[in-house]
Image (cartoon, rainbow, N blue to C red):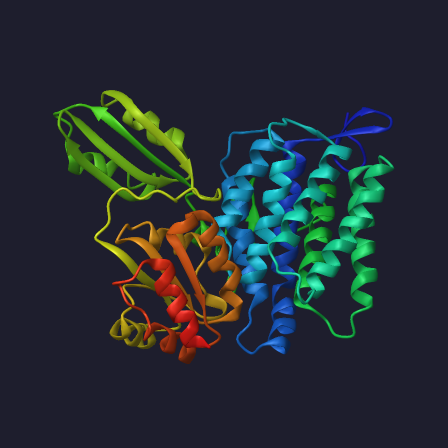
Length: 427
C-alpha cells in the first residue's frame, strides 16, 4: 500500500523506503541542482573568481545518477552503493567531494538492505552527514560544516520520534535554514546542502520536473547544461584469464570497446589475460565465458579507500602528476619535470576518476599529485585515499606556486621525501 509520499506502509506508523523511492529522491536532487547550479556558481564567484561549485556539484550528480539509468538491481542498498561509487569517482571540486561522501555514508547505512524503514533511512542519512563532515578539516569551522551539523541534529530528533521520511527531511531542511540565517553572507556550501535536501523531498513526492533526465524516456540533450552521459564513470576494475590459445587478441579487444576503457588484452602461455574498467562487470563476464574457461577473476571497486594501493608493473619509481589549467601551462610543467598531466581549471577541473585513471596507467610506482588551485584540494585528497601510500600530495595555491614546487622535484628520491622537498619550496 502506498502512502502519501510514495512509500509503502507496513503499518499505520511504519513506512518502508523502496529502491524506486530512492531513485526518485536522487533524481529529484539532480533536477533541483539543474535549476540552482547557476545561483550556486554566483555565490561561489563572490567568494573566488575561479570558483564554480554549482557546475562541479551538477557534474558530480550527473556521475551519481548515471548508474541508475539501466540498473537491474531493485534493492535500496545496491542502488545506494552504485550511486555512491559513481559520485566518488565522478566528484569534481571540493563541493563535489563533500556530496560524494554524503552518498557514501548513506550507502554504508543501507548496505545489504532491499528496503529500509523510514527510521533506518533516517539513520543512514545521518551517517552520510557524518562522512561529509569528516572530509573537510574543521579548523577553522566552515559554514558547510555548521550547516551539516545543524541538519544532522534536526534529522536526529525526527528519527528518534519515528516520523515519516518526508517529515525527517523537512525537519533537516528547517534546521539547515535556521543555521544559514545566522550567517551574514550567503555561502555556496550551505546552499548546496539545502538544495540537495529540497530536491530529495521533491523527488520522494514525485513533485519535480527535470529538463534533462527521465528514466522512462531516456536522456535528452539540452543547451547550456552538462550532459550526464559525459560524466559516466566506470568504477569496477576487472581482470581475468580465458583459457583459449586460439582467441584473437584484436577481436577480443574490439568487442570490449563497448563495455569499458583501459582495456588490456595479451597472451599468457595458453591463456589470454583481459583487464578493463567497466560499469557493468557482469557484461564482461558474460562475453568472456563464451570464449573458454575463466580463471583468476578479480573485480575491484576503485571507489573504495586503498583500492589501488598495489601496482604490478611500472616504468619508473616516482613521477609527478600535475594539473595544468591549459595546454600552454601543461607544456611548461613538462619542461619543469612533470611526467603525467591533466588539463582543467575552474569549472573544468578534473574529476577524482580522471586523476585515478591517470595514475593507474602505471607509468610510475608512486606519484606526487601537484594541484594548482585550492578548489581541487579535496579531489586530490580523495585520490590519495584510493591510492594509499602510492600517492603524496603537494597542494599549491596558484600556478606560479605549482611551478616553484616542481623545480624542487627529483626522481632520485622516494616519493615521500621528494614531496616534502616540494612542500618546503612552497614555504
